[in-house]
Length: 408
Image 1 (tube, rainbow, N blue to C red):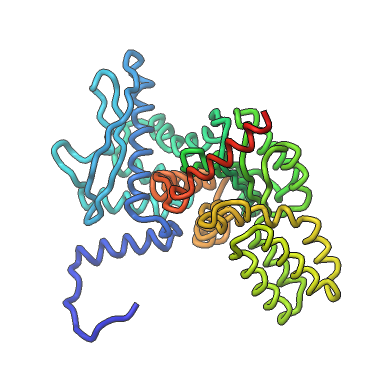
Image 2 (cartoon, rainbow, N blue to C red; image 1 turned 90 degrees about the horizontal axis):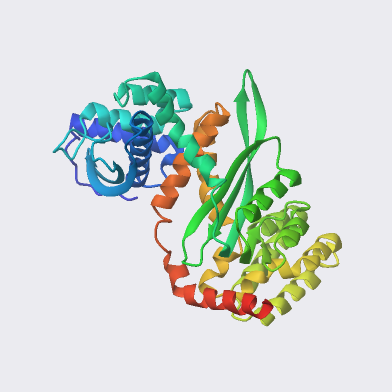
């Protein structure tokens, strides 16, 4: 960003302190989301957990939904969902004092610190304790566990039987266990509902490297929770995964991530040939007609068949799964040809991992970070239907009805 030549006054100490806290937050790997989204998600989660702790001791009272409230955290306006009870006697301890819209400077610093410096659940719990959110260790445990429990519920809740699209991918991480680092894989599944909104349907951290048995468990659980019909599934070409997906979702089209395919091409082709391959693929991707795209795909394979026969044979074998996106509206072709929807979460985890020393402190820490990241997405940029999806939603639902009505 360019700067002008005019000199400005030095910031006040208060502004410097606020900027420092925000910089720490960004350095913690949560900066790809807006500060408002993160703080709103944090405060809403805290208040929800506080209501749970309150109801454990007030058996004659019941939960009674939520109401929206605007708060001020320094110069940052925050929107949160405040939980209610039927009696009206409950008020979340984490809210500012009555008739005040903002928090004290100390509490502001602690809230930012909870997001920026909590490498473990214990650190987050300590921050909650300093904020005076509870009076007993049991309640502190309940509030800290609330972050993790919400993530676990995502893997068991009943699902809508129909989805327009399903995106899934795995993320390799390392988790500290005693004095050793052990490999783990985060299996993430995102669904695009018929109303056009994205939601995380499953998010599991399993020990060991990515493997087919764990993918079977994850995908079968979607069926057990009620999922039945999907228009298109987008995944990477992890060895052996394609046949499993096709067997579990026989009526869905399966699109293999073209970004992963392009990376493979760079590994298999020479530098000059790879550059030509990428250029030809970009022209194919932007074609206006599916049949034209198929013709260009065959021309691409013939061009490199002589020097790279094995790689071209593999591409031809999976041609239908690399070109499935061409059957869909132009505005969504790029979104439906890659697993970038999942990368919105995986990429965020990668930043957090690097800023945590290259690994996660524990299994609970992974779940805590996942919970904050996913909640921020769903309450922020995924809360509304995206513009491109909205422009094509009627067409997507028409395709859905045509396919499944003709099969019934």
